[in-house]
Amino acid sequence: MRGEMSEVDINIRIRRFLSTALREIDSGNYDVAIENLRAAEVLDPGNPETLFNLGISFCRKEQFIEAIDHFTRLIKLPSTPVDLLTVLRLISFSLIKLESYDQALVHAREGLRLVPEDTVLLNLAGFCQEKSGRLAEALALFRKILEIEPDNANASNSLAYLLAGSGTDLNEALEHATKAVKAFPGNAAYLDTLGFVYLKKGNADLSRKHLKKALSLNPGSREIKNHINMLLKI
Image (cartoon, rainbow, N blue to C red; front, side, top):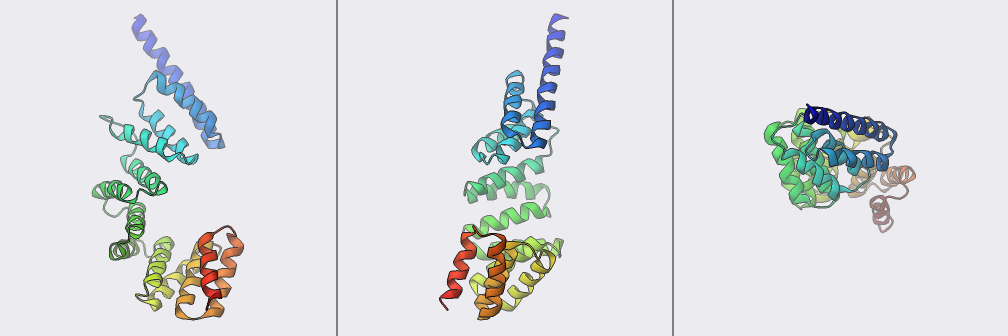
């Protein structure tokens, strides 16, 4: 009986730590959340809810190595109520932030074996292929997203940027870039892509218009500034 009561007491303490941590995560107080989650982890190192929320908290703090460690421990558990697809997305995203594109692609593909039409994972995989210089594979993935979700602005933007950068089809690039900006006219990245497409098409006035607006929305963007420098050299 004493052993059973002790286990009950431990579970109560874990729930209290988790409850406090979740409130702090919602408030953006990730350090306090991590402190409480660490305390819960000491009591039960294999608690899936604790591991998941530690991973989330470290992601929010951009401590991606720690996030990956906890997410990896989570998926190695014999069973977990946490959605595996969500965890694989988060691991892939964290690896991308660490510029480990091939490893990120492995986890994205693992998720796609579970749900082949998951557009979040398709986008992550496409980004990895792009960063690894595999243009054809990246284009195919972004096109697949648009087959599943024709109004996916992020896929339209990515496809436009790759087509413009490679000079493959500037008219198609313009079509996709325009579609993305119409959907989200205040998105600096989409405006930058549209400006870049016009730059590649030789339309300096429209390129300047969109790049200037993009820079006003995101004045710290190195990529937008690079495109403006390219325009100034023409």
